[in-house]
Image 1: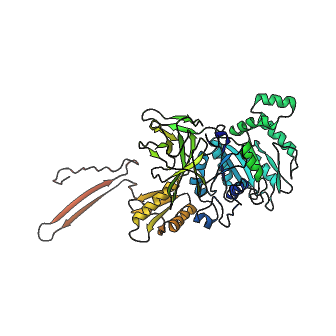
Image 2: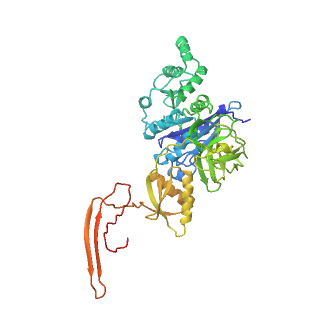
Image 3: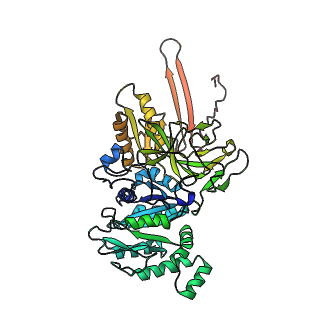
Amino acid sequence: MSKYPIKRIRTIALVGQAGSGKTSLAEALLARAGAIPAAGSVERGTTVCDYTPSEKSFKHSLKLAVASFETPGAEDSHRVHLLDTPGYPDFLGHALPALAAVETAAIVINAQNGIEMMTGRFMQWAGKRGLDRLIVVNRIDADNVDLPGLLEKIQQTFGKECLPLNLPAAGATRVSDCFFAPSGEADFSSVEEAHKRLVEQVVEVDEKLMEAYLEQGEVSADALHEPLERAMREGHLVPVVFTSAKTGAGIAELLDIIVKLLPNPTEGNPPVYLDIPATGAPSEITTLPDPGRHVLAHVFKVEIDPYIGRVAVFRVHQGRLTPGTQLYIGAGRKPIRAGHLYMLRGKTQVEISEAVPGDICAIAKIDEIQFDHILHDSAEDAHIHAKPLELPTSVFGLAVLPRKRGDEQKVSDVLHRLMAEDPCFRLEHNAQANETVMRGLGEMHLKTMLEKMASQYKLELDTRLPSIPYRETIALRAEGHSRHKKQTGGAGQFGEVFLKVEPLARGQGFEFVDKVKGGAIPN
C-alpha cells in the first residue's frame, strides 16, 4: 500500500511569462514545506530547479524541472509534484509538455508588469487541455504596484470567473483568506464581498447547493469543496491568489490551497490517449487513475546527464509501478525492466518503492526511451499513443561546422542528444550545400544550445546563416535558331538547332519533345 494514496497527490505546473518569479515561488513553497532548509536565490544560482551551469549563468530557467515534496503533517501529509517551467517563448519545447503531466496549471503574473504575452497564451493552452487553472499574482511587495487595477484587468481579460481566494492585507505583508475564514481585513476591496462572489460563482454548478444557498443565505466551506473543484474543472471558476516569494507573504496560504482545494488525480479531467490500431480508424480513450489496472505512463521529459546518462521523466496515469516492473516502450516488442524508480527534486534523485496514478517519477539508463513515448506493461497496448502536443514549428536556423577536423561524428552525436531533450530543436541536412542546419524557436534558443555544447560537451562550432538553394525555371514561351559551321581542311563541322521552350504547370516537372524530321540524328 502506497504511503500516499491517490487522493493525497497533487500535481501543479508553474507557467507564465519570464521574470514572473516562478522559480522563486517554487523555492518558497519547498522551504515552507520543509523540503529544503531555506529558499535559494536565482541571482546567486542556488535554487533547486535552476541547477545547470547555463541556467546559473543566464539567471533564468532554460528547461522544465520537477520538484516533488511532501507537506508537513503526520497523518494528513500530501505529496506535491511541482513543475517549474521556462517563460521565454524560445523554450516552449520544455514548458508545454508540463501541461500534459498535471491536473492544475498555475499561471504566475508579475504584479509589477501585469498581464504579458505569455500570460494569455498559457491561459489558452491550459484551458484547451481541460486543466484546472489558478492565477498566482507574485511580487505583491514590489514598488509602484496597482493590485486593485491588476485584479480588474485580469477579470476584464480572462472573464468574471477570475475571483480572488485571498486578498493582500497589512500593506501586502500578508494575505486574508476569502474562502475558509471570510472575516479579515484587506488592503482593497472587501473580504466579505469577495467570499460572497466566490460562493455565488461556485453554487451555480450545483442546483441543490444553489437552492440551499438561496434559502439559507450561506453555505459552509466543507459543502463548497466538491462543487468548487468541479467549477474549476469546468472552467467556471479561475481562482486568483496573491503572494510574494521574496517576503513569504501568501506562501503558507498557497500551500494550503494546493492541498485543500486543488484537484487530485481522481478529480481532474482525465488525459486523452489515442488508440491507433494497425487496421481501422483511430479512436480516443481516457485513462482511469486506478492502480489495479494495466500500466499507462507518459514520458514528457528526457534529460541526458553527463554522469548518469539518459533520464526519462514520466507521469503515471494508470496502474502501479515498482522497481523491476516489466515495461514496454511504445510500439516496441522488447520489454525492459527499470531497476530503480526515482522521485525528482531538481537534480536530486530520491529512490522510491512504487509509483501510483498521479505520481511523476523517473527511470535512468534506458536509451530506447524517447520524448512522448508511452510506457505500458502489456504488449497488447502497443497501439496506444499520447495525444500529440501542439508544439510550435522551429524556423530559426544556423548552419554549423566543427572547428576541429575529425569532430564530425562527435558533433552529430551531441546534436542528436540535444534533440532527444528538446522536441522543438531539430536538425536538417542540406544536400545541395552539404551543410548541417540546426533549427530552433529563436536566437536565444540556439544560443543556449551552443553554450551547452561548449560547456558540457567541450565542443566548439562555427556557425553561419544557412544557404538558400535558389533555383531558376522557365517563365515565358521563347524560341530560337542557331547554325554552326567550321571547315579546317579535313572533315568539316556542321550543326543546326531549332529550339522552343515554354513553362509547364507548376509541379509537372520537365518534358522533352523531339520534333526532328528526316536526317540521321540519334535520339
